[in-house]
Figure 1 (cartoon, rainbow, N blue to C red):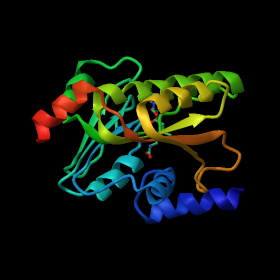
Figure 2: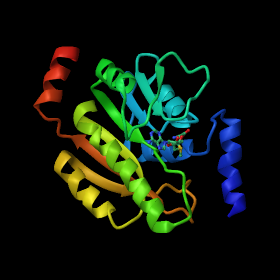
Figure 3: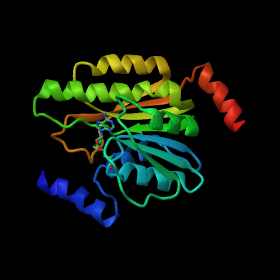
Figure 4: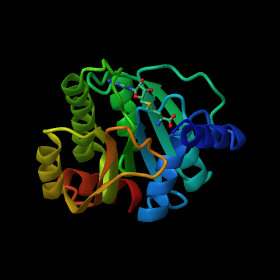
Length: 209
Ligand SMILES: C[S@@+](CC[C@H](N)C(=O)[O-])C[C@H]1O[C@@H](n2cnc3c(N)ncnc32)[C@H](O)[C@@H]1O
């Protein structure tokens, strides 16, 4: 298992990404074609920055990435990335105005994870709370037809979230990347083809039409 972990760790170093988690997003992107040049991406739980850097590369200089984490990331981001230090469970004025300025997003990705306690049910509950918070950003942030990807620790509440996602997306999938540690309880939920309500449809028409 150590060898397996080291492979992605070393690869991330070689590829100049700060975390091995980038290969999970890459696998999801390759399988579900998440990104295209020019898109807008909201990245929740962005520190230390691998997913935001990967998304920035994929959307290119004409795209935009709003990267959000409660931990500060002090680095030279590519020009298309804006970082906002904020708690997604208590979004403050800075995050709300950042969302307002950049929405609607074509893709919302969440790698949000709690500080684990080692108590299985507690960790599942904390993870679920974050994944649910990420999902709750969809109505105010995601464009019609948009995609949602969120990490979750497998647990009893996941079925309830999948049911809620089925109301909002044309297709809903679960995915466990090969680069995710086998012993990890994490997997990823995907919502494809967001059915935006009138408010988003109107703001899209105004902003992009
Ligand atoms: C697994 S890391 C994300 C790794 C990142 N995707 C990357 O590739 O570099 C999970 C992140 O979730 C963040 N996080 C946890 N709870 C949060 C909250 N309530 N609001 C904002 N960020 C949170 C943590 O600070 C941590 O940086």
